Image (cartoon, rainbow, N blue to C red; front, side, top):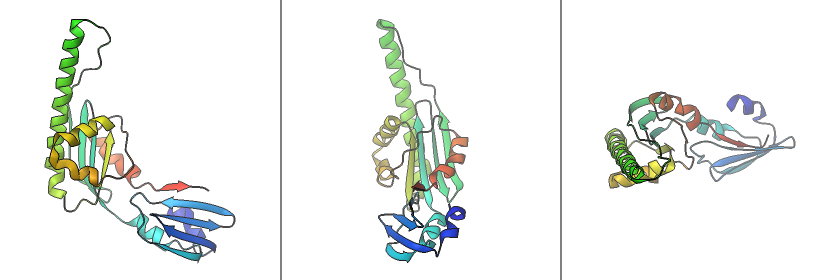
Length: 196
């Protein structure tokens, strides 16, 4: 982002910082950039003024991560792009049963038991990994499956603070694994760009 926009810095135009984003108008172009963790600076300039944007893009944050799908979970803490605490786990959860009959009910009950065990384990792990970092975590990234995440947060009342600090973007990862966690900063720190 910096490499792409730096040549415009100082050019004639208009720059408006508001609502966590910057709008740049220059040479008939209009572009809006919203850093992943917002932009506190506000102001209007009669030139292309990108210093506050570059500062926001370069800022490191302490981010808590909770990724859950039926079948697995990944919990971690990032300082900037460095994973400093993490734990992942998996637990078999049967797929859906396609046939009817009395065996379908047994199958459904077994699947619900497996899912409940996974949710409990993920909630316990989230508390163990994230709670020691609670005072330092600025924002939380949630991902995987929305229903599974909601169930994990509901399973333990002490996890409510994760939802309060959650970024608006949800990360729908297919498999919550250690590799998934390690790749997450690329998506986490990606700025939203509108216009060209």
